[in-house]
Length: 492
Image 1 (cartoon, rainbow, N blue to C red):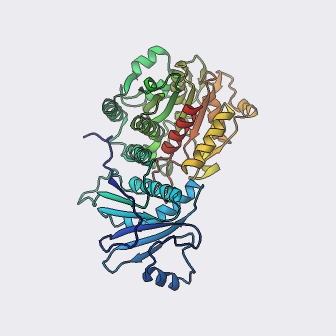
Image 2: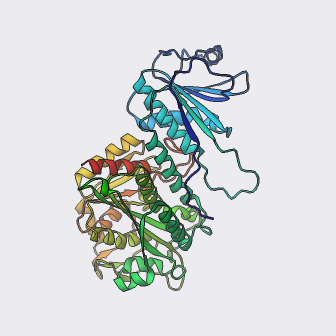
Image 3: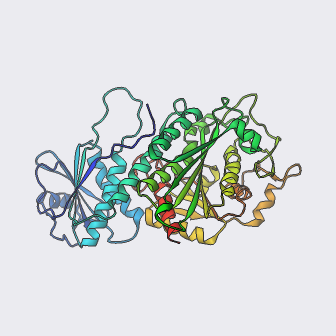
């Protein structure tokens, strides 16, 4: 059974006329209005007014209101901003739709009112929320599976030009979440590679695998140091190529790099149980990179896109690397090992070197890399670093546009002396851990050969109560942001 699959999303049907009355047959319905007091000819049932009166509310405010219908259904009413604030819109729509989706209906109706441009935006945003949160995700529970949403009806707009993009993003995000949620005894490094190969064949991507023996011969000592502690011949750097340039001359050539540590014990510097819990999700960066390529392929973006996935495990074994070891990375730099739980930057070092050798226009890397980024931002933003100011500008704009918000951090040179080593070219990290998210980025910068490069530390890969459009704790953060970045880079 393939773990990676094209998610079975609900069929979407667009109905152009405005809904004048909520039909009795619409058991699960969401009504969307612009902020303000205007009802814009929306149905104004007495049931809603009664609920608002009980709440002593003069009207719909910033929270949705749910109303039970005589037929036993549920209608939710919500107002959203007329423009801007993608994160706020997604969060409010998710709160409105969650009571409906929690009942696992087979059909949902969403109706929008107000100016036409608002209705288009509202229905596209609602479709994204519904499709994301009804896509089947992995469960190993026994017993009957819940009903899967079969049809989503969107009512009130003449056309939805962004619907294809919404569907592609929902599928791509679901692929990333599906992979990230798989338990480590199911999705180990070897199985992950086989699943990636199956997806590459399905999507017609060119695939090249750099296995452990090949990487040893090439001199990729940073990756090998981590991978040698796992089962033999399972770890690898996998290269995937989607090429849509035939439709556009001079199109952008972008590289994506993803950390794919399928389980992270911490190695000889073993994590305590509290911090080892959830470490099967340490491959999330590679899943995000895969999701971005998936979305770009579905939308036939006119670019060349190469994904480099650093797939391995960080285990404790007689072969595992140790503190005080000195290894030579693929670009010839020697690295003093300070802490075996800083394995992510090790596997990324050689993977970034391979990506840079292809001289792409830009490199974007994704990794659940440091605990200090969680300390800095919590789990509602992810942090970004870049060696070009223009990339940071694009990154912040993409975050605002998609609701996947990012915060820019400095690559300040005066932090770098903390990584000076007496026995090698660079230390892998410090034992003190101060500003480790910045030190990790400065370490990675040494391996990009001054190509335009942006690093995302995925502190928002998991958020306890969901985030933005996503209800599940595993968020798929970075897929929508990454597609927006590709579109900005392609336009430039």
